[in-house]
Image (cartoon, rainbow, N blue to C red; front, side):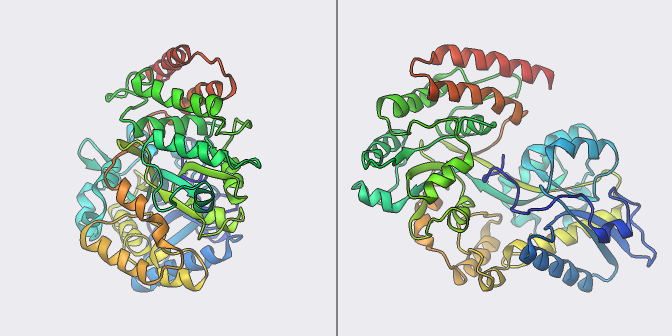
Length: 450
């Protein structure tokens, strides 16, 4: 899953832009062009309906081509950047771009089906590679070989409403860091009445399973074994997650009566000032403000409760197995220009973002380490237009947590766990032991087929 429940907020459909159709088929070409340049096709160009993003993306591509006159970049727009319904078909049919967008959870699968180029021999040409967070680089490393480059990353935390914290007599600068504290604070917030909900959680459209996984990580648990072959939900951590949700829902009445929620429900409630807390990543914050009516001053994010770990996600680019060496080198240059230079490029030009009223100063994504991270954060701070103090506890707290990626066969597993979570939140007498045994058996079957 992505942290917002969707891909980057591009709103159009289609795989090839008109420019791309005129120049080449959707799939990877041989890398040559009539002018003798090295041609690469790339995807995840913002659609025309996202005018500002499209303008910036195209401007950055044009500046790259001016600096590299021997490279021709053909861009394809799409919404979402990767459609799970067509992703495998495009790979199998030879229709994937030369440089193509992927979820973190795609990496192993694309390598397993032999559709990714090995980038290892070319990494010395990517100056920024060593500056990227190792835990993100490792996601695209399989059996010691590198098959992709991370572009963004997020980790889960606790979004909360500072105004409701104050009204409930809680310190808005001290968000809860344990699940016992979450439960206690949620009860106080719900006691404000007038339809106010202390804590909300998802339980439909695979999002319940996604959050169950995040909550398992937060307590040191997992949903599959370390070798990825067996379920690991019927454990003390699994019981603790479900018992906590059951008690908040039925004993404390702090989760409200409406259940089977998805991300938009929680965002609507938070934007309307009727929700105290829910799990999310920092990229939810501008959505709450721009689309749901919240204020930047009221919305804050704290660390993932539990103190053991947090779920991370994000995206990156992989390279078509048919790419020529020249195309791989060109693609790496393009990624460095667009995404991998601190304070610059499509996602990192904070001054440009600020001039166009985009939020600058959110704690993530945080791609770099060391001096590169320091430079990126310095430029971000200089252009910040959101209350960065509201995110300090998230930065400090999550830095101490174990970061874990989503499990294999995530969407199928989440579908199973949706039923587990929804049963606990809709049935007061739900049999937690039985639910976890049943989920464990179903997950074992999924893993046995993969």
